[in-house]
Length: 82
Image 1 (cartoon, rainbow, N blue to C red):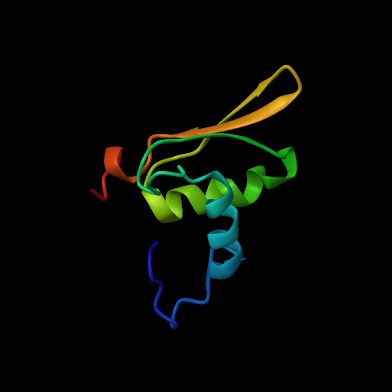
Image 2 (tube, one colour):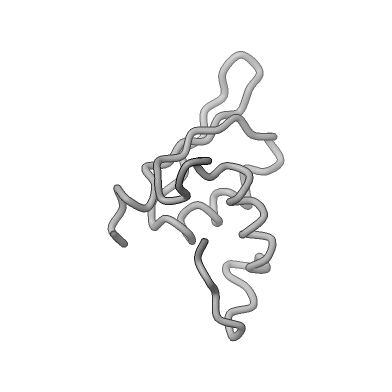
């Protein structure tokens, strides 16, 4: 996982530790840099909208289908940071 220097305490109003927890819930289980596709709680959308780009450099896209909320992102390997 990414090591964040102690100087960075927050990003866009969220603590780095909270972004990390949110991202770990949706990251690919084989490698965090892979594309993201996960079913999430609707209340996690706001923090994931910040956490996913923070770690991958790619935007998060949310879909609502059959009562589920799904998040997808290209992931670090497909993004501009790679």
